[in-house]
Amino acid sequence: MDYKTIMCDVLVVGAGGAGCRAAIEAAEHNLDVIMLSKELLGKAHTAMAEGGYNVSLGNVDPDDNPETHFKDTIVGGNYLNHQKLAEVLVNQAAQRIFDLEDMGAVFDRTPEGKIAQRPFGKQTWRRTAYASDRTGSEIMVTLTEGIRKTSVRVFDEVFATKLLVTDGTISGVCAVDLKYGDFLVFRAKSVVMATGGAGRIFKVTSNAQLDVGDGYGMAYEAGCEMIDMEMVQFHPTGMVKPESAKGRLVTEAVRGEGGILFNNKGERFMNRYYPEVMELAGRDQVARSIMTEVLEGRGSPDGGVYLSIAHLPKSIVDFRLESMVEQFEDAGVDIRNEPMQVSPTAHHFMGGIRIDEHAGTTIPGLYAAGECTGGVHGGNRLGGNALADTQVFGAISGENAAKFAKNKKHLGVNREEIVKEFERLEAMLNRKEGISPSDARSELTELMWEKVQIFRKEDDMQYAVKELRRIEEEVVPNIKVDVPVKRFNPGWHQAIEFAHMVTTARMVAEAAAMRKGSRGAHFRVDADPKDKGYYNIVIRKGKNGKMHLQKEDLRITQITPP
Image (cartoon, rainbow, N blue to C red):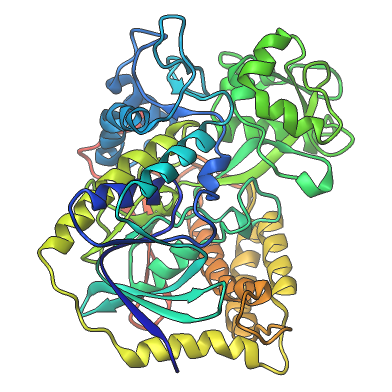
Protein backbone atom coordinates (compact mmCIF):
# COMPACT_ATOMS: atom_id res chain seq x y z
CA MET A 1 0.00 0.00 0.00
CA ASP A 2 1.64 3.23 -1.17
CA TYR A 3 1.09 6.49 0.62
CA LYS A 4 2.90 9.79 1.00
CA THR A 5 3.85 11.19 4.41
CA ILE A 6 3.82 14.93 5.04
CA MET A 7 5.20 16.46 8.24
CA CYS A 8 4.18 19.64 10.06
CA ASP A 9 3.99 21.13 13.53
CA VAL A 10 0.29 22.03 13.66
CA LEU A 11 -2.35 20.46 11.45
CA VAL A 12 -5.77 22.11 11.08
CA VAL A 13 -8.48 19.86 9.65
CA GLY A 14 -11.15 22.05 8.09
CA ALA A 15 -10.99 25.43 6.39
CA GLY A 16 -14.15 27.24 7.44
CA GLY A 17 -14.40 30.15 9.85
CA ALA A 18 -12.96 28.20 12.79
CA GLY A 19 -10.26 26.40 10.81
CA CYS A 20 -8.97 29.51 9.07
CA ARG A 21 -8.90 31.46 12.33
CA ALA A 22 -7.05 28.60 14.05
CA ALA A 23 -4.48 28.38 11.28
CA ILE A 24 -3.88 32.15 11.28
CA GLU A 25 -3.37 32.11 15.05
CA ALA A 26 -1.07 29.08 15.01
CA ALA A 27 1.05 30.65 12.26
CA GLU A 28 1.75 33.60 14.57
CA HIS A 29 3.95 31.26 16.61
CA ASN A 30 6.51 30.74 13.86
CA LEU A 31 5.58 27.10 13.32
CA ASP A 32 4.96 24.98 10.24
CA VAL A 33 1.17 24.97 9.93
CA ILE A 34 -0.85 22.94 7.42
CA MET A 35 -4.59 23.40 6.84
CA LEU A 36 -6.63 20.73 5.07
CA SER A 37 -9.67 21.84 3.07
CA LYS A 38 -12.13 19.24 1.79
CA GLU A 39 -13.09 21.70 -0.94
CA LEU A 40 -11.54 24.78 -2.51
CA LEU A 41 -10.38 27.34 0.03
CA GLY A 42 -13.12 29.88 0.72
CA LYS A 43 -16.08 27.66 -0.12
CA ALA A 44 -16.74 26.40 3.41
CA HIS A 45 -20.21 26.38 4.92
CA THR A 46 -19.34 29.47 6.99
CA ALA A 47 -19.77 31.46 3.77
CA MET A 48 -23.47 30.51 3.81
CA ALA A 49 -24.09 32.08 7.23
CA GLU A 50 -26.22 35.13 6.62
CA GLY A 51 -27.60 36.86 9.68
CA GLY A 52 -24.68 38.01 11.81
CA TYR A 53 -22.17 37.77 14.63
CA ASN A 54 -23.23 38.25 18.27
CA VAL A 55 -21.09 40.68 20.25
CA SER A 56 -22.10 42.94 23.13
CA LEU A 57 -20.59 46.17 21.82
CA GLY A 58 -23.54 48.32 22.88
CA ASN A 59 -23.33 50.34 19.68
CA VAL A 60 -27.12 50.41 19.22
CA ASP A 61 -28.34 49.53 22.71
CA PRO A 62 -25.78 51.03 25.15
CA ASP A 63 -27.03 48.92 28.08
CA ASP A 64 -25.82 45.70 26.46
CA ASN A 65 -22.79 44.04 28.04
CA PRO A 66 -21.06 40.62 28.20
CA GLU A 67 -22.98 39.70 31.36
CA THR A 68 -26.31 40.08 29.56
CA HIS A 69 -24.96 38.23 26.53
CA PHE A 70 -23.89 35.42 28.88
CA LYS A 71 -27.31 35.26 30.50
CA ASP A 72 -29.08 35.18 27.13
CA THR A 73 -26.76 32.42 25.94
CA ILE A 74 -27.38 30.28 29.04
CA VAL A 75 -31.13 30.82 29.05
CA GLY A 76 -31.25 30.20 25.31
CA GLY A 77 -29.26 27.00 25.82
CA ASN A 78 -31.74 25.83 28.46
CA TYR A 79 -28.95 25.81 31.07
CA LEU A 80 -27.15 22.88 29.42
CA ASN A 81 -24.19 25.00 28.30
CA HIS A 82 -20.82 24.48 29.93
CA GLN A 83 -20.76 27.91 31.42
CA LYS A 84 -16.99 28.46 31.35
CA LEU A 85 -17.19 28.06 27.59
CA ALA A 86 -20.07 30.52 27.38
CA GLU A 87 -18.10 33.02 29.48
CA VAL A 88 -15.14 32.75 27.14
CA LEU A 89 -17.43 33.23 24.13
CA VAL A 90 -19.08 36.43 25.36
CA ASN A 91 -15.91 37.95 26.81
CA GLN A 92 -13.72 37.43 23.74
CA ALA A 93 -16.25 38.03 20.96
CA ALA A 94 -15.46 41.76 20.79
CA GLN A 95 -11.71 41.36 20.32
CA ARG A 96 -12.23 38.74 17.63
CA ILE A 97 -14.58 40.95 15.60
CA PHE A 98 -12.02 43.75 15.84
CA ASP A 99 -9.45 41.26 14.53
CA LEU A 100 -11.69 40.69 11.52
CA GLU A 101 -11.92 44.42 10.94
CA ASP A 102 -8.15 44.70 11.15
CA MET A 103 -7.93 41.99 8.48
CA GLY A 104 -10.27 43.98 6.25
CA ALA A 105 -13.82 42.80 7.04
CA VAL A 106 -16.48 45.41 6.30
CA PHE A 107 -19.56 45.37 8.54
CA ASP A 108 -22.62 47.59 8.18
CA ARG A 109 -22.37 50.80 10.21
CA THR A 110 -24.56 53.01 12.37
CA PRO A 111 -24.96 56.70 11.39
CA GLU A 112 -22.11 57.41 13.84
CA GLY A 113 -19.82 55.02 11.97
CA LYS A 114 -19.84 52.21 14.53
CA ILE A 115 -20.55 48.54 13.73
CA ALA A 116 -24.32 48.21 13.29
CA GLN A 117 -26.27 45.64 15.32
CA ARG A 118 -29.68 44.08 14.68
CA PRO A 119 -32.12 42.13 16.89
CA PHE A 120 -32.07 38.33 16.83
CA GLY A 121 -34.21 35.76 18.58
CA LYS A 122 -34.24 35.41 22.36
CA GLN A 123 -31.76 38.24 22.95
CA THR A 124 -32.27 41.10 25.39
CA TRP A 125 -30.64 43.76 23.21
CA ARG A 126 -29.81 44.41 19.57
CA ARG A 127 -26.50 42.58 19.56
CA THR A 128 -26.00 40.94 16.17
CA ALA A 129 -23.35 42.63 14.01
CA TYR A 130 -23.84 42.08 10.30
CA ALA A 131 -22.76 42.74 6.74
CA SER A 132 -26.15 43.00 5.00
CA ASP A 133 -27.32 39.36 4.94
CA ARG A 134 -23.96 38.05 3.73
CA THR A 135 -22.07 38.16 7.02
CA GLY A 136 -20.54 34.69 6.74
CA SER A 137 -19.39 35.36 3.21
CA GLU A 138 -17.71 38.60 4.29
CA ILE A 139 -15.94 36.78 7.11
CA MET A 140 -14.76 33.94 4.85
CA VAL A 141 -13.45 36.31 2.19
CA THR A 142 -11.53 38.15 4.91
CA LEU A 143 -10.09 35.00 6.48
CA THR A 144 -9.14 33.54 3.10
CA GLU A 145 -7.17 36.68 2.32
CA GLY A 146 -5.69 36.51 5.82
CA ILE A 147 -4.51 32.93 5.24
CA ARG A 148 -2.75 33.98 2.01
CA LYS A 149 -0.71 36.51 3.98
CA THR A 150 0.67 33.83 6.31
CA SER A 151 3.04 30.90 5.90
CA VAL A 152 0.17 28.39 6.29
CA ARG A 153 0.35 25.57 3.74
CA VAL A 154 -3.15 24.92 2.39
CA PHE A 155 -4.00 21.53 0.91
CA ASP A 156 -7.19 22.02 -1.12
CA GLU A 157 -9.55 19.12 -1.84
CA VAL A 158 -7.94 16.80 0.67
CA PHE A 159 -10.30 14.60 2.71
CA ALA A 160 -9.17 13.53 6.20
CA THR A 161 -10.65 10.12 7.02
CA LYS A 162 -9.04 8.98 10.27
CA LEU A 163 -7.27 10.48 13.29
CA LEU A 164 -4.03 8.79 14.31
CA VAL A 165 -3.34 8.39 18.02
CA THR A 166 -0.03 7.13 19.44
CA ASP A 167 0.19 6.15 23.12
CA GLY A 168 -2.95 8.15 23.85
CA THR A 169 -1.70 11.36 22.17
CA ILE A 170 -2.63 12.71 18.75
CA SER A 171 -0.02 12.06 16.06
CA GLY A 172 -1.69 12.91 12.73
CA VAL A 173 -4.37 11.93 10.24
CA CYS A 174 -4.95 9.67 7.27
CA ALA A 175 -6.32 11.46 4.22
CA VAL A 176 -7.16 11.13 0.53
CA ASP A 177 -6.24 13.63 -2.18
CA LEU A 178 -9.60 14.00 -3.89
CA LYS A 179 -8.12 15.31 -7.13
CA TYR A 180 -5.70 12.47 -7.80
CA GLY A 181 -6.82 9.70 -5.45
CA ASP A 182 -3.48 9.52 -3.65
CA PHE A 183 -3.32 8.32 -0.05
CA LEU A 184 -1.68 10.77 2.36
CA VAL A 185 -0.54 10.68 5.98
CA PHE A 186 -0.08 14.00 7.74
CA ARG A 187 2.07 13.66 10.83
CA ALA A 188 1.72 16.53 13.30
CA LYS A 189 2.65 17.43 16.85
CA SER A 190 -0.87 18.82 17.43
CA VAL A 191 -4.13 18.80 15.49
CA VAL A 192 -7.12 21.15 15.42
CA MET A 193 -10.47 19.73 14.36
CA ALA A 194 -12.62 22.37 12.66
CA THR A 195 -14.76 20.17 10.46
CA GLY A 196 -18.17 21.82 10.83
CA GLY A 197 -21.56 20.20 11.27
CA ALA A 198 -23.61 17.31 9.93
CA GLY A 199 -26.90 18.65 8.60
CA ARG A 200 -26.60 16.31 5.62
CA ILE A 201 -27.58 13.31 7.73
CA PHE A 202 -31.11 14.73 7.38
CA LYS A 203 -33.11 14.79 4.15
CA VAL A 204 -33.92 18.50 4.42
CA THR A 205 -31.10 20.79 5.53
CA SER A 206 -29.63 24.25 5.11
CA ASN A 207 -26.11 22.80 5.17
CA ALA A 208 -23.55 22.58 2.39
CA GLN A 209 -23.14 19.25 0.60
CA LEU A 210 -19.97 18.35 2.49
CA ASP A 211 -21.41 18.83 6.00
CA VAL A 212 -21.81 15.12 6.68
CA GLY A 213 -20.28 14.73 10.15
CA ASP A 214 -16.73 13.69 9.25
CA GLY A 215 -15.29 15.33 12.36
CA TYR A 216 -17.80 13.71 14.70
CA GLY A 217 -17.15 10.27 13.24
CA MET A 218 -13.36 10.60 13.29
CA ALA A 219 -13.26 12.02 16.82
CA TYR A 220 -15.54 9.30 18.19
CA GLU A 221 -13.52 6.52 16.54
CA ALA A 222 -10.30 8.02 17.94
CA GLY A 223 -11.68 7.89 21.49
CA CYS A 224 -12.84 11.48 22.09
CA GLU A 225 -15.69 12.16 24.44
CA MET A 226 -18.72 13.54 22.60
CA ILE A 227 -21.41 15.58 24.29
CA ASP A 228 -25.09 16.55 23.69
CA MET A 229 -25.30 14.91 20.27
CA GLU A 230 -29.10 14.76 20.50
CA MET A 231 -29.26 18.56 20.42
CA VAL A 232 -29.78 19.37 16.75
CA GLN A 233 -31.19 22.77 15.84
CA PHE A 234 -33.84 22.92 13.16
CA HIS A 235 -33.85 26.44 11.79
CA PRO A 236 -37.49 27.55 11.61
CA THR A 237 -37.26 29.10 8.15
CA GLY A 238 -35.94 27.17 5.18
CA MET A 239 -37.21 27.45 1.61
CA VAL A 240 -40.08 25.16 0.68
CA LYS A 241 -39.89 25.33 -3.10
CA PRO A 242 -38.63 24.77 -5.69
CA GLU A 243 -37.74 21.21 -4.72
CA SER A 244 -34.11 21.78 -5.72
CA ALA A 245 -33.85 24.55 -3.11
CA LYS A 246 -35.86 22.86 -0.35
CA GLY A 247 -34.28 23.51 3.03
CA ARG A 248 -32.10 26.37 1.83
CA LEU A 249 -31.71 28.90 4.64
CA VAL A 250 -33.96 31.92 4.98
CA THR A 251 -31.94 33.98 7.43
CA GLU A 252 -33.23 34.96 10.86
CA ALA A 253 -32.36 38.50 9.79
CA VAL A 254 -35.67 38.50 7.89
CA ARG A 255 -37.51 38.23 11.20
CA GLY A 256 -34.94 40.43 12.92
CA GLU A 257 -35.75 43.23 10.48
CA GLY A 258 -39.47 42.87 11.18
CA GLY A 259 -40.70 39.91 9.13
CA ILE A 260 -43.97 38.32 10.28
CA LEU A 261 -45.22 34.74 10.09
CA PHE A 262 -48.79 33.89 9.21
CA ASN A 263 -50.79 30.78 8.30
CA ASN A 264 -53.27 29.95 5.54
CA LYS A 265 -56.00 31.76 7.48
CA GLY A 266 -54.01 34.97 7.48
CA GLU A 267 -53.40 34.71 11.24
CA ARG A 268 -50.13 35.93 12.75
CA PHE A 269 -49.91 32.66 14.62
CA MET A 270 -46.88 33.38 16.83
CA ASN A 271 -49.31 35.35 18.99
CA ARG A 272 -50.78 31.97 19.90
CA TYR A 273 -47.48 30.53 21.13
CA TYR A 274 -45.12 33.27 22.29
CA PRO A 275 -47.04 36.56 22.35
CA GLU A 276 -44.36 38.48 24.27
CA VAL A 277 -41.61 37.99 21.68
CA MET A 278 -43.58 36.75 18.65
CA GLU A 279 -41.28 35.92 15.70
CA LEU A 280 -38.17 36.54 17.80
CA ALA A 281 -38.75 33.59 20.12
CA GLY A 282 -35.99 30.95 20.27
CA ARG A 283 -35.32 29.00 17.12
CA ASP A 284 -36.60 25.75 18.63
CA GLN A 285 -39.77 27.53 19.72
CA VAL A 286 -40.47 29.09 16.35
CA ALA A 287 -39.71 25.82 14.53
CA ARG A 288 -42.17 23.88 16.72
CA SER A 289 -44.81 26.59 16.28
CA ILE A 290 -44.51 26.42 12.50
CA MET A 291 -44.69 22.63 12.44
CA THR A 292 -47.73 22.68 14.72
CA GLU A 293 -49.52 25.00 12.28
CA VAL A 294 -48.65 22.71 9.38
CA LEU A 295 -49.61 19.48 11.17
CA GLU A 296 -52.94 20.96 12.29
CA GLY A 297 -53.86 21.94 8.73
CA ARG A 298 -53.12 25.65 8.81
CA GLY A 299 -50.05 25.52 6.60
CA SER A 300 -49.48 26.56 3.01
CA PRO A 301 -50.36 24.22 0.12
CA ASP A 302 -46.69 23.22 -0.15
CA GLY A 303 -46.31 22.24 3.51
CA GLY A 304 -44.95 25.43 5.04
CA VAL A 305 -46.21 28.75 6.37
CA TYR A 306 -45.86 32.29 5.09
CA LEU A 307 -43.17 34.81 6.04
CA SER A 308 -43.71 38.37 4.89
CA ILE A 309 -41.64 41.56 4.82
CA ALA A 310 -43.84 43.24 2.22
CA HIS A 311 -44.83 45.85 4.83
CA LEU A 312 -41.23 47.09 5.14
CA PRO A 313 -39.82 49.92 3.03
CA LYS A 314 -38.33 48.48 -0.17
CA SER A 315 -35.11 50.40 0.44
CA ILE A 316 -34.58 48.56 3.75
CA VAL A 317 -35.26 45.19 2.14
CA ASP A 318 -32.90 45.86 -0.76
CA PHE A 319 -30.09 47.08 1.49
CA ARG A 320 -30.27 44.76 4.48
CA LEU A 321 -31.66 41.60 2.86
CA GLU A 322 -30.00 41.76 -0.51
CA SER A 323 -29.20 38.08 -0.91
CA MET A 324 -32.71 37.08 0.21
CA VAL A 325 -34.16 39.22 -2.58
CA GLU A 326 -31.90 37.46 -5.09
CA GLN A 327 -32.51 34.00 -3.61
CA PHE A 328 -36.28 34.24 -3.95
CA GLU A 329 -36.15 36.00 -7.32
CA ASP A 330 -34.58 32.77 -8.60
CA ALA A 331 -37.69 30.98 -7.30
CA GLY A 332 -40.04 33.50 -8.94
CA VAL A 333 -40.96 35.34 -5.73
CA ASP A 334 -40.52 39.08 -5.17
CA ILE A 335 -40.23 39.25 -1.38
CA ARG A 336 -40.66 43.03 -1.46
CA ASN A 337 -44.26 42.53 -2.53
CA GLU A 338 -45.31 38.94 -1.70
CA PRO A 339 -44.73 36.44 1.11
CA MET A 340 -42.19 33.63 1.17
CA GLN A 341 -43.15 30.06 1.96
CA VAL A 342 -40.94 28.62 4.71
CA SER A 343 -40.66 25.52 6.89
CA PRO A 344 -38.03 24.12 9.31
CA THR A 345 -34.74 22.73 8.05
CA ALA A 346 -31.92 20.84 9.82
CA HIS A 347 -29.38 23.54 10.56
CA HIS A 348 -26.87 23.39 13.42
CA PHE A 349 -25.43 20.86 15.87
CA MET A 350 -25.12 22.13 19.43
CA GLY A 351 -23.45 18.87 20.41
CA GLY A 352 -20.09 17.56 19.32
CA ILE A 353 -16.52 16.99 20.47
CA ARG A 354 -16.18 17.81 24.15
CA ILE A 355 -13.77 20.70 24.74
CA ASP A 356 -12.56 22.73 27.70
CA GLU A 357 -12.02 26.50 27.84
CA HIS A 358 -8.65 26.02 26.14
CA ALA A 359 -10.35 24.21 23.21
CA GLY A 360 -8.64 21.00 24.33
CA THR A 361 -10.34 17.63 23.89
CA THR A 362 -9.99 14.46 25.94
CA ILE A 363 -7.05 13.41 23.69
CA PRO A 364 -3.80 15.30 24.45
CA GLY A 365 -2.64 17.41 21.50
CA LEU A 366 -6.05 17.36 19.84
CA TYR A 367 -8.00 20.63 19.87
CA ALA A 368 -11.34 21.53 18.34
CA ALA A 369 -13.32 24.64 17.40
CA GLY A 370 -16.55 25.67 15.73
CA GLU A 371 -19.64 23.60 15.07
CA CYS A 372 -17.88 20.26 15.50
CA THR A 373 -17.60 21.00 19.24
CA GLY A 374 -20.17 20.61 22.00
CA GLY A 375 -20.80 22.47 25.25
CA VAL A 376 -20.76 26.11 24.14
CA HIS A 377 -24.40 26.41 23.08
CA GLY A 378 -26.08 23.89 25.37
CA GLY A 379 -29.54 22.78 24.36
CA ASN A 380 -30.16 25.48 21.78
CA ARG A 381 -27.93 28.00 20.02
CA LEU A 382 -28.80 31.66 19.75
CA GLY A 383 -28.72 32.93 16.19
CA GLY A 384 -25.50 34.91 15.75
CA ASN A 385 -23.53 32.96 18.36
CA ALA A 386 -22.12 30.50 15.81
CA LEU A 387 -20.01 32.98 13.87
CA ALA A 388 -18.71 34.38 17.16
CA ASP A 389 -17.93 30.80 18.25
CA THR A 390 -15.83 30.15 15.13
CA GLN A 391 -13.66 33.19 15.77
CA VAL A 392 -13.32 32.94 19.54
CA PHE A 393 -12.57 29.23 19.78
CA GLY A 394 -10.80 29.19 16.44
CA ALA A 395 -8.23 31.62 17.85
CA ILE A 396 -8.00 29.75 21.17
CA SER A 397 -7.53 26.36 19.50
CA GLY A 398 -4.84 27.68 17.17
CA GLU A 399 -2.94 29.34 19.99
CA ASN A 400 -3.02 26.33 22.30
CA ALA A 401 -2.25 23.84 19.54
CA ALA A 402 0.83 25.93 18.73
CA LYS A 403 1.93 26.07 22.36
CA PHE A 404 1.51 22.30 22.66
CA ALA A 405 3.49 21.67 19.47
CA LYS A 406 6.38 23.90 20.56
CA ASN A 407 7.28 21.56 23.41
CA LYS A 408 6.78 18.24 21.63
CA LYS A 409 8.50 15.99 19.15
CA HIS A 410 6.76 14.03 16.42
CA LEU A 411 5.42 10.73 17.69
CA GLY A 412 5.71 7.52 15.75
CA VAL A 413 2.69 6.15 13.90
CA ASN A 414 1.39 2.62 13.47
CA ARG A 415 1.99 1.61 9.85
CA GLU A 416 -0.34 -1.40 10.15
CA GLU A 417 -3.16 0.88 11.29
CA ILE A 418 -2.53 3.25 8.38
CA VAL A 419 -2.42 0.45 5.80
CA LYS A 420 -5.63 -1.02 7.23
CA GLU A 421 -7.39 2.35 6.84
CA PHE A 422 -6.30 2.76 3.22
CA GLU A 423 -7.22 -0.84 2.42
CA ARG A 424 -10.70 -0.13 3.82
CA LEU A 425 -11.08 2.85 1.50
CA GLU A 426 -9.73 0.98 -1.53
CA ALA A 427 -12.01 -2.00 -0.91
CA MET A 428 -15.02 0.15 -1.80
CA LEU A 429 -13.61 0.46 -5.32
CA ASN A 430 -12.86 -3.25 -5.74
CA ARG A 431 -16.15 -4.72 -4.50
CA LYS A 432 -18.04 -6.64 -7.19
CA GLU A 433 -21.39 -6.50 -5.38
CA GLY A 434 -22.85 -4.19 -2.78
CA ILE A 435 -24.94 -1.10 -2.12
CA SER A 436 -24.41 2.19 -3.92
CA PRO A 437 -23.51 5.18 -1.73
CA SER A 438 -26.39 7.15 -3.24
CA ASP A 439 -28.99 4.55 -2.22
CA ALA A 440 -27.42 4.13 1.22
CA ARG A 441 -27.42 7.88 1.88
CA SER A 442 -31.04 8.23 0.75
CA GLU A 443 -32.12 5.53 3.20
CA LEU A 444 -30.20 7.16 6.05
CA THR A 445 -31.35 10.74 5.47
CA GLU A 446 -34.97 9.68 5.04
CA LEU A 447 -34.82 7.69 8.29
CA MET A 448 -33.36 10.61 10.25
CA TRP A 449 -35.82 13.13 8.80
CA GLU A 450 -38.84 10.96 9.51
CA LYS A 451 -37.90 9.55 12.92
CA VAL A 452 -35.43 11.92 14.61
CA GLN A 453 -36.85 15.27 13.63
CA ILE A 454 -38.39 18.19 15.56
CA PHE A 455 -41.12 16.23 17.37
CA ARG A 456 -39.68 13.04 18.85
CA LYS A 457 -41.28 10.04 20.54
CA GLU A 458 -40.13 6.76 22.02
CA ASP A 459 -41.29 4.41 19.25
CA ASP A 460 -39.60 6.51 16.59
CA MET A 461 -36.38 6.78 18.60
CA GLN A 462 -36.15 3.05 19.18
CA TYR A 463 -36.92 2.30 15.54
CA ALA A 464 -34.22 4.72 14.40
CA VAL A 465 -31.65 3.23 16.79
CA LYS A 466 -32.45 -0.30 15.61
CA GLU A 467 -32.24 0.64 11.93
CA LEU A 468 -29.03 2.60 12.34
CA ARG A 469 -27.36 -0.32 14.08
CA ARG A 470 -28.47 -2.53 11.19
CA ILE A 471 -27.14 -0.03 8.64
CA GLU A 472 -23.82 0.12 10.49
CA GLU A 473 -23.49 -3.67 10.52
CA GLU A 474 -24.93 -4.56 7.11
CA VAL A 475 -24.65 -1.55 4.79
CA VAL A 476 -21.40 0.23 5.73
CA PRO A 477 -19.18 -2.85 5.09
CA ASN A 478 -20.88 -3.42 1.72
CA ILE A 479 -20.71 0.02 0.12
CA LYS A 480 -19.75 -0.39 -3.53
CA VAL A 481 -18.53 2.31 -5.90
CA ASP A 482 -19.71 1.84 -9.49
CA VAL A 483 -16.70 3.49 -11.15
CA PRO A 484 -13.50 1.89 -9.78
CA VAL A 485 -11.12 4.81 -10.21
CA LYS A 486 -9.41 6.93 -7.54
CA ARG A 487 -8.88 10.09 -9.55
CA PHE A 488 -11.62 12.59 -8.63
CA ASN A 489 -14.44 10.11 -8.11
CA PRO A 490 -17.47 11.72 -6.35
CA GLY A 491 -19.06 8.30 -5.87
CA TRP A 492 -16.03 7.14 -3.91
CA HIS A 493 -16.02 10.32 -1.85
CA GLN A 494 -19.67 9.76 -0.93
CA ALA A 495 -18.93 6.17 -0.01
CA ILE A 496 -16.10 7.23 2.33
CA GLU A 497 -18.35 9.86 3.92
CA PHE A 498 -21.11 7.36 4.57
CA ALA A 499 -19.40 5.63 7.50
CA HIS A 500 -18.98 9.01 9.22
CA MET A 501 -22.64 9.83 8.53
CA VAL A 502 -23.83 6.59 10.11
CA THR A 503 -21.66 7.03 13.21
CA THR A 504 -22.92 10.60 13.64
CA ALA A 505 -26.55 9.63 13.07
CA ARG A 506 -26.24 6.81 15.61
CA MET A 507 -24.89 9.20 18.26
CA VAL A 508 -27.81 11.58 17.62
CA ALA A 509 -30.45 8.85 17.75
CA GLU A 510 -28.98 6.92 20.70
CA ALA A 511 -28.70 10.09 22.81
CA ALA A 512 -32.21 11.18 21.79
CA ALA A 513 -33.55 7.80 22.88
CA MET A 514 -31.79 8.11 26.24
CA ARG A 515 -33.16 11.61 26.96
CA LYS A 516 -36.76 10.87 27.96
CA GLY A 517 -37.76 14.45 28.79
CA SER A 518 -37.91 17.58 26.65
CA ARG A 519 -35.16 20.15 26.86
CA GLY A 520 -33.88 22.71 24.38
CA ALA A 521 -34.01 21.55 20.78
CA HIS A 522 -34.83 18.01 21.93
CA PHE A 523 -38.63 17.89 22.17
CA ARG A 524 -40.45 14.70 23.17
CA VAL A 525 -44.17 14.56 22.50
CA ASP A 526 -44.26 11.74 25.07
CA ALA A 527 -41.94 13.47 27.53
CA ASP A 528 -41.51 11.94 30.96
CA PRO A 529 -42.43 14.78 33.39
CA LYS A 530 -39.98 13.34 35.94
CA ASP A 531 -37.05 13.86 33.56
CA LYS A 532 -36.18 17.53 33.99
CA GLY A 533 -33.18 17.00 31.78
CA TYR A 534 -30.57 19.01 33.68
CA TYR A 535 -27.72 16.80 32.51
CA ASN A 536 -25.46 16.24 29.54
CA ILE A 537 -25.22 12.97 27.67
CA VAL A 538 -21.60 11.96 27.15
CA ILE A 539 -20.76 9.41 24.44
CA ARG A 540 -17.50 7.52 24.03
CA LYS A 541 -16.35 4.42 22.22
CA GLY A 542 -15.93 1.59 24.71
CA LYS A 543 -12.97 -0.77 24.84
CA ASN A 544 -15.24 -3.44 23.39
CA GLY A 545 -15.89 -1.20 20.38
CA LYS A 546 -19.48 -0.49 21.40
CA MET A 547 -21.02 2.95 21.81
CA HIS A 548 -21.20 3.90 25.48
CA LEU A 549 -23.62 6.61 26.68
CA GLN A 550 -23.68 8.16 30.13
CA LYS A 551 -25.71 10.91 31.78
CA GLU A 552 -23.58 13.49 33.51
CA ASP A 553 -25.22 15.89 35.96
CA LEU A 554 -24.18 19.47 35.44
CA ARG A 555 -21.93 20.81 38.16
CA ILE A 556 -23.64 22.56 41.03
CA THR A 557 -21.25 25.48 40.60
CA GLN A 558 -23.09 26.47 37.46
CA ILE A 559 -26.12 28.74 37.39
CA THR A 560 -29.06 26.41 37.77
CA PRO A 561 -32.42 26.78 36.02
CA PRO A 562 -35.30 28.43 37.87
